[in-house]
Length: 340
Ligand code: GAL
Image (cartoon, rainbow, N blue to C red; front, side):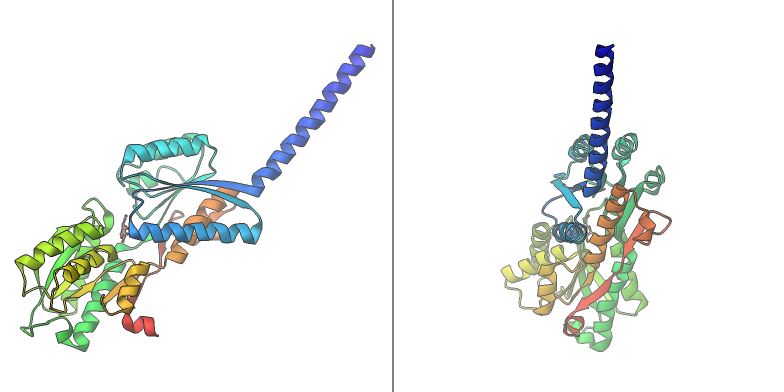
C-alpha cells in the first residue's frame, strides 16, 4: 500500500514537472525565432547591401520586442546543390522560416518539397521562382522589384536628360546616341525585361539610339570592366552611352574608362542604387541609377518571415499581391534627386 502511494506521488510529481517544462518551452519559443537565409553569391553588390539591411531589421525588431532573432546567413556559392543542402541543414536546426535567394530560379522544387515536408515557410527573394512552383503551397512568398518598372525608370532618366539637352547623350552631335549594353545573367528574369524596357522607353520617348554592341557580364563589376575595355578598343571614338542592367556593371565600365584614360565623357546609367553607385552619381561619374528601396524590401522579407515564424497573419503587416507577392517601390536617383 505504502509502495503504491509513493509511486503515485512520484508520477504526479513528474507530471507536474513535465507540464512545467512544456510551458517553459512554449514561452521560450516565443522569446526567440530562428531564420535561415541563403544568398546565391556572397560578393553580389546589391545582395550585400540587402543582407546588411536585413540584419538591421532583425536587430531593430529584437530591440523593439525583446524577441531574440537568430539569423543564419549563408553563401550558396552559385551552386544549387549547395543551396539545397543548406536548406536541409536549416530545417534540421529547427529554423522557423527560410529566406531564400535561389541560385537557379527554375529549380526551386527541391527546396519547396523539403520545406513542405517539414512545414517550414519560405520567403524567396530577388530571384523569382516560376509561378507553377510558387502555387504549390500557401506558405511560399516572393519579395522583389518589378523589372519592367526599374527599366522604364532607367529609360526615363536618359530620355529626360536628352530632352533637356541632346548633347548630354549625343556627344558628337550627329543626331544619334550610340550605346553599348551590359546585361545581367541570361537566366535571370530581370536581365531580359530590363534590357527590353529600357530601350523601348527610349524609343517611345523619341530618343534616336543605335546599339554598337552588348554583352553579358552576369551583374559583375570585373566582367563588365573586361568587356568595356574590349569595346573601347573596338569603338574608340563612337561609344556615347553605357546602358547597364545594374550598377555594379556600370561601375565596372567606369573602371575600364578610367583605366584606359578614355577622354570622352561617356555617360553611364545603372539600376540598384548601391551605396557605391549613389556616391558615383553624387560625384557626377554616373548619370543615374534606380533605387529599389532596400529598406522596405528588407523589411518585407523580414516581416513575412517573422510573422510566419510567430504564427501571426502576414497580411496584417505586409501588403501582398495574390497573398504571396511583394514588389518594392522604386525611384530614380540622379544628381538632381540627390540634391532635393
Ligand atoms: C538584380 C540586381 C543585380 C543582382 C541580381 C542578382 O535584381 O539588380 O544587381 O543583384 O539581382 O540576382
